[in-house]
Image 1 (cartoon, rainbow, N blue to C red):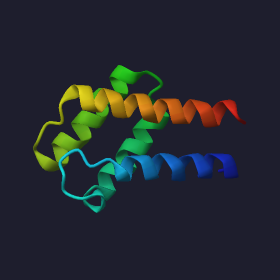
Image 2: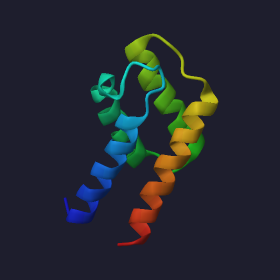
Image 3: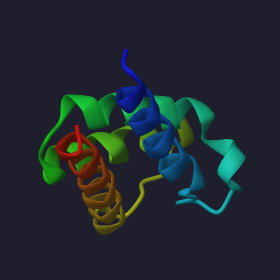
Length: 88
């Protein structure tokens, strides 16, 4: 893995970990953050990524994040990913 990819993953992971959709504190979502990071690399479109994000958190916490919140997060993550990739 090259340095740019590593930096991108660190930045994305940081964004994901600071997202606190249930108000449990940002350190409550470590395994979900890693799953979401993987999903960011698998999906290039907002809606499928948002659906995946919603499913990851619902599976872990048995609570549903409103879809609009997942869409906003997916938009931010894909925007950040695309900005870094365009900088290569």
